[in-house]
Length: 309
Length: 108
Image (cartoon, rainbow over all chains, first blue to last red; front, side):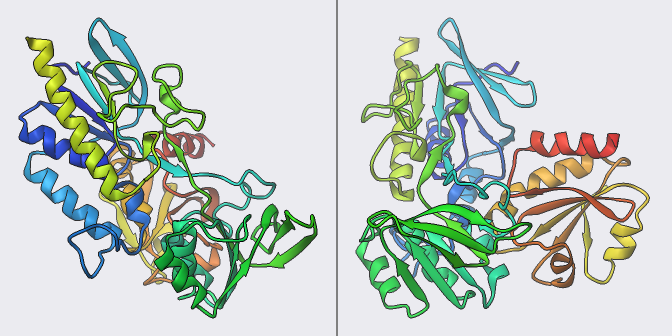
């Protein structure tokens, strides 16, 4: 049991690191727990172009290095562990960790973020790492001069399709609707790219291949017509799934598993706050995660003051 | 023992001919999840010292070995025993998941 803390932050992405910066400056005794090296999903992003202050854009990894350096200047020493449960003891919270350790604190900020959502079709799980990927910056270079498919129509799908044309000779962008959801500037780039072929109104029903991806079976949702596209890789960007398995039955979650909060990041438990992509909200961006993190840390500080009073 | 760096040139000597079972982390500098699990790999190298050899192979600088093992994603962790790949893990996973596979490999 580790006691004597004011605040435990679970997760070291943009929201968690920002919360740490604010909490440390408020001189709260703060411990940040992170399963991996801090950084979060942004580490997978080749280029961040919508975070203010970087007019030329910046790589996701470099932006996170800067967040981390700022947090380290304020004493950050992240604990490399995984939160597996949250329970209450009086007005204190116990954060249970994968190593068996337990952290005791009156306030907790949940900033565990999210990971890629799976398609849930035959072949997907079996062929993950063998042509099925959720990270274009990681795996794109293995598909030099091949034909690949991207599934999705949002910002990530469209941005990564353009990125993949650096390696692949052709990219099919498979989307279940007849128009993209991605922001306009990204759409314009994709439409202008001769290597991208759009496959509209279509869903993937199966990923084909024995020990490596050889194709995808797709179905037109308007005509029910099925056909097979021969591809060596399938990159899936159909949204995200929050990392909240460890909070089921503990905090109020929405139907997608995201944590429900008010505008001040308060969850259904007093003293527990949520920030970033893990929270139920409509705009999931680095810049909104950062705002959430600052608000959550400030609210934790106020909560601690009121608790002492 | 620190994490050893292996290359196409010394892969046979360092990994395939190793007395101990070997965990090889195939990674690259441009891969976010590879960076993310790097500290986990370092901790494992410390904790399993004397039982498991832990190595990293940069796929950018060493294209031959990843091709031989059909690697299409990184990070990929492959466990070698007596020169043969016996288990593999793709993507960044929790330390406990890697440890479960290590126990299996060491017990077999």
